[in-house]
Image (cartoon, rainbow, N blue to C red):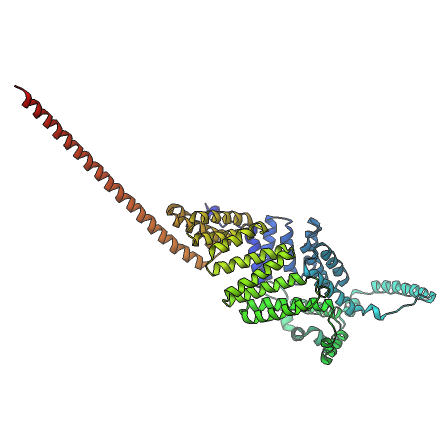
Length: 531
């Protein structure tokens, strides 16, 4: 009995919870969810990648790389696995290897712009480390061969000497202190943190103490300093001080504004602007987001396809951003026009994902302005484009909700059951809750109160698992109303049956009386006829 009361934890619910925690920045807790999810479904490539991202956020590049490689062993053409491996290698400072995997990813998925951005930043980091190859000119003379052989021999001897050196000397060399000015430029705001940790090291009493978990404070401080040193070295490789000084000089002189932008610079600028547009909308600055998107749209339309290879895709994406901002501002007609322009652009360029996105947004606008039949038609067109069970779950739910608004309760109930089935396949408790509530509300409209009560009770259990106090209160109120309706119907049926039974009894007594009178009249006639 005790086991039956425990909530069932599914792979989908663990993945959802882990993703939400990761977005909130609670990467340690998210990691626990992904670990539990992989116990239920070992070797799931999508879960491995999400855990790899989590490891990377926590600075554990080794485990991040292991998970990325594990996903590629399952599917060597997995684009997310290639991208995550490239990102991890880039973070580790292995820019050349990162560049290899960015290129592999772009060959597999040229439609994904992030691979091109990865190539650009990896190439820039390599150039910053070794200098621009165009500035170096070598002539193939015989003397060079001799010099190269001598250099190779010297290198081998140096390596042997280095291996024979004691470990302490090697560590001292690696932790060679840089000048405070250089370190401040590299670490930025983190320089103050490092200075604070180094100050703590001088407190001998504190360094000898331990935490409640038994970890020495000195070990924690040293690990923090070590991490900051690693980041300093990485940033030094990625963009040395001389590169930063040169960039500042260029910016001061205004040369970047006078020169024609390179495709790589344009790509970085677009990616940054797109991110800003989405961030402004998420923060509630819809008007500013809309203005920025409209300015960006004019710029992209002015550029050639050589400068922006995915120009048409970006134009559609910006129409979508403008439409979302207009919807947030309550400009429904304008939002509908923008999303329809996104749809036309996507269809003209055969962009399936963009078509799906545009249909979704158009349906939302129609639903918001009360045109539920148009919303249904739009979303039903999107059904074949849905790629996952989770996407189908919310799509069927939205269609069912529109049918319920149109008082087509039977169809709404059917779509609610489809939504519930998709949510069960994904193992998503939240959408199981929404779908179950929709089915129950449709059954109330159909006056199937008994079934509605059962489904509201199931929804209440789901609301406890989510957990959502607001949902629980709403379902309890709905259960109370349905129960009252059910009792009223039972009382009405009981009264109707009582009235019918009385009428039946009355009818039968009248029949008996009439029959008796008829018999008496017949007997009287017979007596009168006798002589």
